Length: 446
Image (tube, rainbow, N blue to C red; front, side):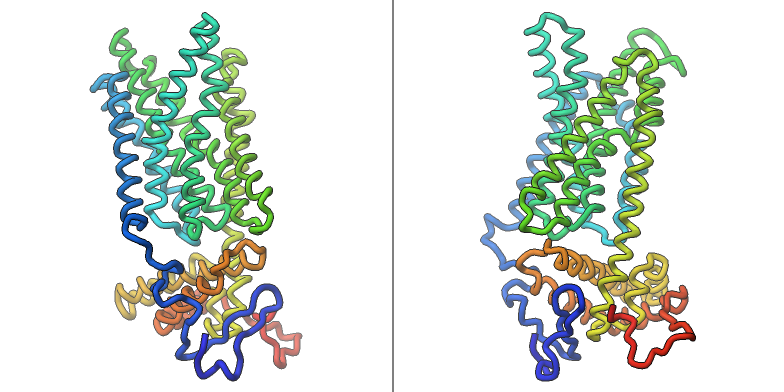
C-alpha cells in the first residue's frame, strides 16, 4: 500500500498478530493484483470458470432430483407423494430459519446454503436410497434372513451411507468455497442445511408410504400410520438428521480454524466428526432393538440432551464470534481505519440494526444497504485477522485484507457516523473509570 502516509508509517504493529496497514485518506491497495478486480484470484478460462461449474452442479442436482422424484412417487403413488410432500415441508422453514439466525454474525452466501439443501434433498437422498436398498437386498440374499437384513441395514448400513453422502456437501463447500467457510458456525450451518434437505426427502417417502398403508387398510384419524409417522418424524424429531450431520460440520469447522501446517489434525477432525455422526445415527436407528420403549428411552436419555448441548454450543459459538470482532477490530481502529466506537458497535447485533435503521431514515435505503455491507466486510476482516493469528489464514492474506479494507474505505463516509451513533444509542461506548489516569492511554492498544 502506498500513498502520502507511506513515508510516515508503513504499518501499525499490533501486539498480537500481523501488522495492520497504516491508514491513508487516499490509499492505494497495491497488494491486490489489478487483474483480480477485488476477487483475489485472476479470471480463469471460460471452461474453468464459475459459470460452467455452476451449470454443471445445477445439472447434476436437477437430474438427481428428477430421479429421486420418480423413485419416491413410484413407491408412494401420486396421492401419497402429494400428502407426504405437504407434511414434510412443514418443519423445513423453521429449521432453515434457525440455522440462518445462527449465521447472522457473518452470513454465508445463500448460494452455498441452497446448494447444501439441494445436495441433501437430491444427491444424498438418491445415493442413500440406492445404496441402502442394494446393501439390504444383498445381505438378505446372503443370509437368507430378510428380517435381520433389515435390522442390520438400518443400524449399520444406513448410518454409514447416509452420513457419508451428506458429509460430501460439507466437504465440497469446504474445498471450493473456502473463503466462505471460516469456522465452527459455518460448518454447523452448512451441515444443518444439508441434513434438512435430506430429511425433507426422506420424510416424503415415509409419510407417503404411511398414507398408502392407511388407504389400503382403511384407517384414519389419530390411529392411522400417517398420524403416528407425522408425530414421530415431524413433531418429536425434526432435528434428528441435522443433529447427526452437525457433528460432521463441527469437525470441518474446527479444521477450518486449525493452523495450515497441522495437516494431520485438519484431516482427523472431520473424520472424527463423521464417525460420531454415524455412531449417533446408528444408535437412533437401532433404538427399537432395545424393546418397545427403547425408542423413547434413547430419545429422552440421549437425543434430547445431545440436542440441548449442541444448541448451547452453537449459540455460545455465535457469541464468541461477536467477542472476536470486539477483540480484533480495535487494531484497525488504532491504525485509523475505523473510529473508536465502531468495534464496539460491530460486536453487537442490536447496535448493527440501529446503525442500518439510522442510515435508512437519514439517507435512504441505499445508505442502509451500504451500512449492512460495511458491517459484513468488517466482520470478515475481524475473522481473517483472527485466523491469521492462529496460522490458519491462506497465503493471500495481505491481498484479502486489503480488499476488505478497500470495501470499508468506500463505505466509510456513510457507515462510520451511523455506527458511532448506534454505539452511543445502545450504550456501547468505552468510558474510562474515574479513578485511573488515562494520560496517553489507548483503550484499543491491548
